[in-house]
Image (cartoon, rainbow, N blue to C red; front, side, top):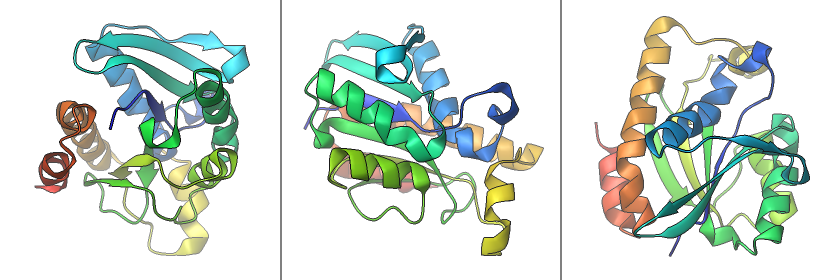
Amino acid sequence: MTIKMIVGLGNPGKEYEHTRHNAGFWLLDELAWAWKVQFKEEKKFFGDVARVSLPESGEVWLLKPNTFMNLSGKAVGALAQFYKIKPDEILVVHDELDIACGRIRFKLGGGNGGHNGLKDIQAKLSTADFYRLRLGIGHPGDRNLVTGYVLNKPSSEDKQLIDEAVHKSIKGLPLIMSGNLEEAVRFLHSG
């Protein structure tokens, strides 16, 4: 198993930059900084793209779609098709309502839990068999409040928990990249 593309989900634009729904973007920004690469806009891939060459896993593409969340698959599909990246070589990082704020879950495949970004990626790839790194943002308690909740900034306490989850995820990434999935799950799901 080799990850060749890491996708962070979020919405483009300054007004969404600090919202819970952009947790995937936050992780990719930190990762780009840690790996000393810079994103540049690639119109043919409908997103901001960076490429890094890692000694242990070779070439890895980082992608932040410039489409809105519910059209994320357009960017993922374009990059995957162009570079012949298979679905099980893709890791999608996204916010997750059904996980307590600051918790992390890592898995292959599964449903989309109503997450429109995942729904679109599944549709464009014609499969759910891609890896997901799910960053818990908590739930507002009522499904009618979800849209406002994900499109608003977290409290400073929640932001700190999400930031800690982002940093822990980046620490756990080498385990994922090297194929030590059980160890990655143990590390990421602990605490």
